[in-house]
Image 1 (cartoon, helix red, strand yellow):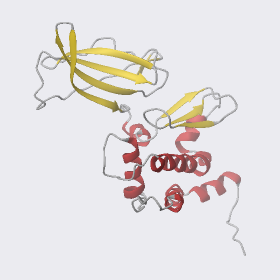
Image 2 (image 1 turned 120 degrees about the vertical axis):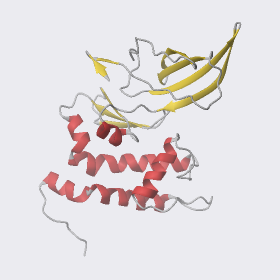
Image 3 (image 1 turned 180 degrees about the vertical axis):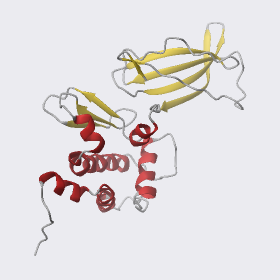
Image 4 (image 1 turned 180 degrees about the horizontal axis):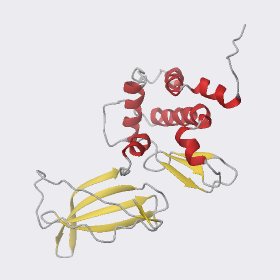
Length: 234
């Protein structure tokens, strides 16, 4: 949430049934690449969020979070349990639904309109904050639905398969799993090919085609340029 231009977060921790010692310390950490902030959250037996939960110094709107349970024994601190790569929810449920797979960040990209960051813990679409109206365009504009999102989807699928992720039911905390699940369950794509000699290119193309069909990319682009029909080759 934002207050006066500053961002802060709330967290609800459910530790019941984990068998953790009540005196163990709780910590919540927000991070993005090298940017990092740690917040003490009391103990397992008495969770207590700090009053100051500002995300100052974290350069993205939706950083990832991790939760740690730490047992102190003298000068030694031992991690008893941890949850990593937790993606926060937006207060707006509709915004959260749209952005859960692809967080969007706004920054100065020079002459570039958009960029896709696949080298962090979760794919992020970076949009040029210098462009007036780009937030609304990214939300519902024909430009993004027809030209940007299909190529973003293709790049994400290529990275997933290049890293050897093939199972849409593997890990609910893994972004590759969630994207494959979207492709297979929401778009009706078959599971991607897993054999070493199988070329995934055709699977990617068919899945991107299904994605474009879902977005009605062609008709939206025609509306954008003022065209009324589709030319077919002879």
